[in-house]
Length: 339
Image (cartoon, rainbow, N blue to C red; front, side, top):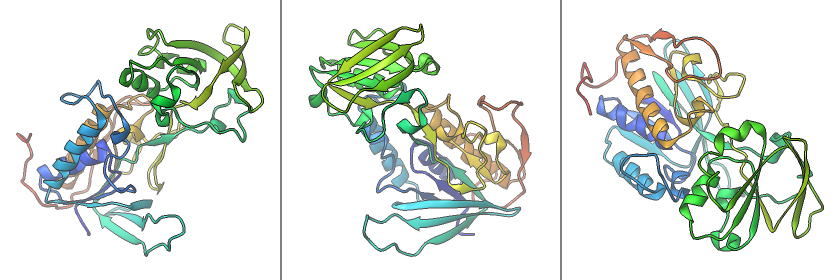
């Protein structure tokens, strides 16, 4: 075995798994495709639901420092896990280097361990996945989180979807004089609570939105949930559609929604973070699930029962108990009393 635990994904969930594993004496290798851990976290200007921090960059810096103190964890940056295979006695992760466009790709590797924590998170949904949008082919629609505050100040912005980045932008820039016209489908209604009281936001629940010609200003004809037809006009348009899970190929099991709940996995595969469920995508829950997944691997290595689930997901059935096969790893005999 190359290590006691392989961790795929260097966001808050994967980093929490590495720190927890080290605390109980498990060696780990953390595989991250970016050039730093918590890359997405560094782009979040305001954090309002994590104890002790108020912004993403500070939290990412603190997590990076915690990892640096973990002698039992080796971080492999610029490395992408392409396939995960699970067997009775081990897991194997195929890893290839991430190379700049036009550069020759270096040789890949195949890492082996008794267990793996998969915390690859989610990626942004594109407009092709939104059946309520029309006329988007060939149109440049950047994601809202990439918007330059100076470029949208004093302008009317059409926001497609009511996902959480809108609330983040609004909280981070209360000084903006931007008018946000937010067109969203009925299934996004539960997402609007944090921005519905912002006077800069106009919410338009729609069944269908069809863009007009590609010209300035931006125009779109919508059919609202009440059946009304309206024409929305804006200076700019941004995508804010939400996310989709991004697991590696192989042994990671997905439910019909595409997410990968812990209870559905092979006994040697633990999922953590946003990858688990469409409903529990928060920094705090990601970190907790990462620590829980690492402890699950530790207990399984001792032949102790471990819960492979815990949070409700879109599939039915209560959490199951899985007796992991005993595989000896380093560390104290009992992590009880740990931090």
